[in-house]
Amino acid sequence: FPSRTAAIRPPRQLQKDDFLVAAHDRESRAPMWRLAALCCTTALQLPSRPLRTRVRLHAGDEDAELCVALTVHKPHKVDGPKVPSPLSSDTAFVGDGAAVLASAATEKGDLIDRAYAAAGPRSEIIPAQTCGIVTCGGLCPGLNTVVQELYRCLSMQYFVERVWGFEGGYEGLAQGKRVDLARVLRKKNVYAEGGTLLGTSRPKIPAAQLADAVEREALDCLFVVGGDGTMRGAAALSEELQKRDSKCRVAVVPKTIDNDIPLIDRSFGFDTAVTEAKRFIDVASVEARSFPRGVGVVRLMGRDAGFLAVHACLAAPGDVDACLVPEKSFSVDALLRYVNEKLDEKDHCILVVAEGVNTRVIDGNGPVTVDGDVGPWLCAQLKANLESISLKYVDPSYAVRSAPSNAADTIFCSRLAQHAAHGALGGSTAFAVGTVNTHYVEIPLQDFANRAAVCAVTGRIFGDLVRSTGQPAFDND
Image 1 (cartoon, helix red, strand yellow):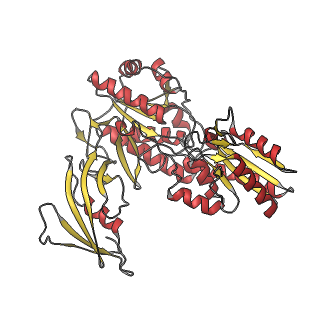
Image 2 (cartoon, rainbow, N blue to C red):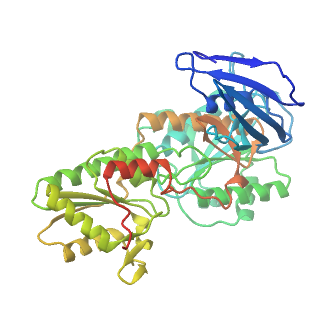
Image 3 (cartoon, rainbow, N blue to C red):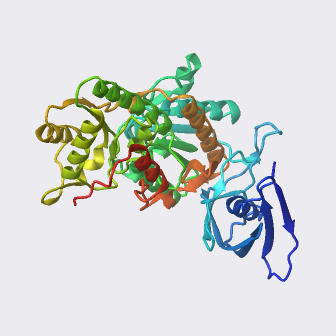
């Protein structure tokens, strides 16, 4: 362990497959459960079969036993003749047994039960002559970067002869609307532009129809960039292709500015969206502070999850007085009292509300659902119940998702695209690329089924928000 002192001690009165790890910080000698758990489990060179063992960690004067019943979730592999990778010999190739733990944070007595196959270039590949790329669903910062870097990696590193884009998402694929990416990207780089050069759409195309298009276009690999609905479509397409004994590999690069795709650390474009959203909070803050009894209301995207609203508020510490998210109900009366208190205290108040809050409202008669946009509705409530306020409503709407990606997201998009290409050329199919515990992994599409990521109101990130804003629970008391 770099900059750490650690020792692997020989087994002593331990059963088969048990081992002992001693780890401590060089200076403070503090217990390091997370580091020890991650290192000792990774050191096992995880096999494809489930691994079952007990790990006893010793750090300082404390002991803890972790139960490991680990299964490595790997994507399906297509059969086909393999050849040595055309990548340079000094490439850091990833072995088929490499894996990343689903969670590095452990508590005493926790069960470690899941890991994912590590992403990266393989020393042997199944070559491809024709690949396709589609972008589906809503816009997101970084889409053009993903498309551009997929093309560059496939054509320049793996020497794929034909890399087509398909205009308008799944619909364009079904209709054969090719885009010659070599012609478009030879003239300019598009990573600095918002939107997607391929266009997008949301129609539901039957998997059989998409499979027909894949066979008609003779695609060896199809790269899909989209959110949860797009991923379900890719999973259905992969299943249909496998039924037909097709060798086409389907890889997904997940995206949503709501950051509500489960299992992965974050989705690309989210960092940029937070930065853009924070700019509009700044606007509301300046306006509210400049007028007597000024109230600023900022409405942000977030239909089912409040990650964007929460992170944007944390990016503006001290400016926001309350953040309303879809994960938590709130009492209108309690909110009005709080806003009035803030106006009496400092003569201004800033509220940030996620669009999905319209289903989490509680009034004097109990839970209600607000018809239409929650932003104008909340403004109407404030105007009707608070005296002499100067209300400023800021709705960035689609501005946060149409912006070009910032530097951090551009780097992230580039690496996701390359790992998607590595995975597909390595023979993986029906998988999505993403980061888990900051490591790039290949996650089977079936693992995303019936899962959702939400901003838990009992979690640490929401707790940090509450401490930043000082807001109460807004219960109907």
